[in-house]
Image 1 (cartoon, helix red, strand yellow):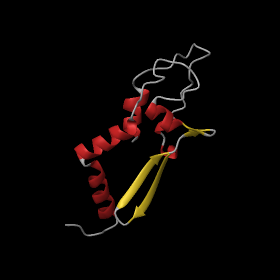
Image 2 (cartoon, one colour):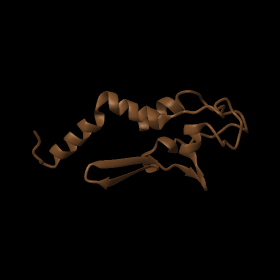
Image 3 (cartoon, rainbow, N blue to C red):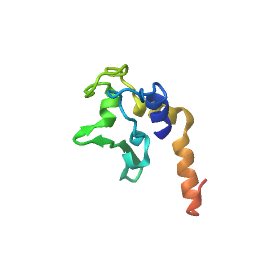
Image 4 (cartoon, rainbow, N blue to C red):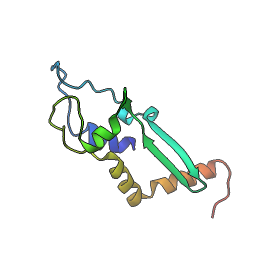
Amino acid sequence: MKDKVKEEVYDVYTPDPNSAYSYKRTGLLGSEESMKSELINDTTLVIENIRSDGDRNVAEVVESGQNYNYSFEYAGVPRPFTEATREDLRNTGAHKAAMYKGLKRQNIKLK
């Protein structure tokens, strides 16, 4: 998900550092601290971006493009990094490779 936040969100524009009205980028949306993982049963791991700013769900605002507190060129424009992550995992199988590697590291025999 970190890669897709970078590609879909951060790489598409650079805030103007000279503007008093420009967003000051924190990088927290793509940080591991903003990602919660939960094993909900024996076969399902859910990873959710929980980045917030006060009571605002920043991940949801960026994903939808709605409810920004300021106007800028991407207000109203969805940047769906979660779906881009899902699609990347479907295409690459990276999640399966990571699971295999983790199980092997724990000396669990795999076929």
